[in-house]
Image 1 (tube, rainbow, N blue to C red):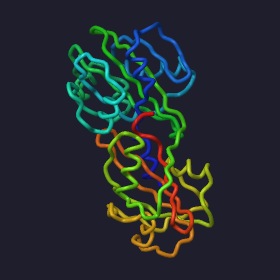
Image 2: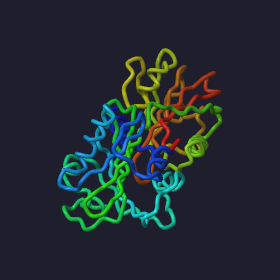
Image 3: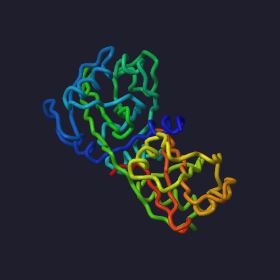
Image 4: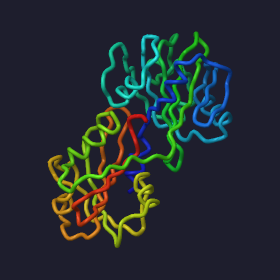
Length: 292
């Protein structure tokens, strides 16, 4: 399950609250329950200082930096739908994605202008783009998105928005294909995904509890469950009720499938499906990935 921990840490959620903050005029730095804003001076270490400022303002950790996305919006604010489209890897008229950079200590120690062209190379001119910083707390149950916009040559105005512990659950029939399952989550999230890349099959003496489901969604291990099969590139035409048999483990009373799906720009997410009524119905859950 270690690989799943790495997968789930790459997920990024765009929130409507962020757009509200960006379209409003900037006020002095202040803390709020799910949103905060600040202005920083660009100099070496500015990205790291910005995240530390938000921790001080909110009194809560912003977590580890996962991804930085540089976007040229032509000076325009983006709507919720436009940000959702960018995160899902789709094109937005008049908006150019300059680059996506993996988070790390070097990124935190550089300048905002260095990142603004979408390439971390130690150089940077007067920025014309916006930066999206995606971070996640150590337990994986809270995700933060910070959008920074250049204000002149030396100052950046930044808004932090948080996505708390939320789970999207869908009830599906056993005849639902893997492609149909993915389409249902895409519709619920209003964002396209790729895959499924892989499916793991787990079993145990009974259905996982709500707490155990959260552990699975966060990429953790559950002692009462054991992994009995892993299939890379499962056929999208497989029905949920047939996955165990097609994975070589047909005689299971309790079936839990963990599917890996991909977001084109910012990473991957898992969907956990648990069988009910001997596989006639399935309860599938995932962390939202397309806004809320």
